[in-house]
Amino acid sequence: MLGMLFNDKEFKELDYVLRKELDEMLFDLSDQRLDLDVRNAIANRYKTVFRMYARFAPPKELSKYARNNKLSQFKH
Image 1: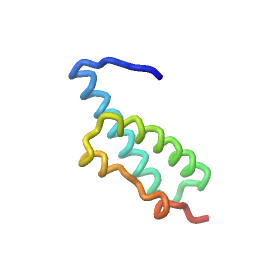
Image 2: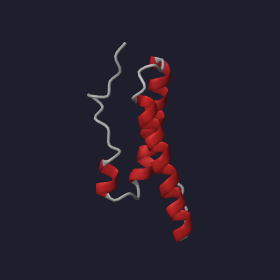
Image 3: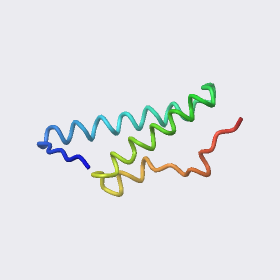
Image 4: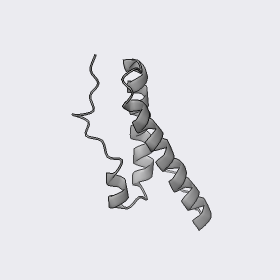
């Protein structure tokens, strides 16, 4: 396990960067023009970034980025 210490400015920047990355990935996942393999890769990365964000985000904010895996399955 690794640990990191952030000051307030760094914490806010990390929060901002993770939220923007999650927003971008959600946008990409909704793009049906992308290849299934690409969307699956984005979905896997989304899970990782979401878990990072979940470590410090308040539940109300976190719920904005939660995905229902059964509903988000990709059609072939």
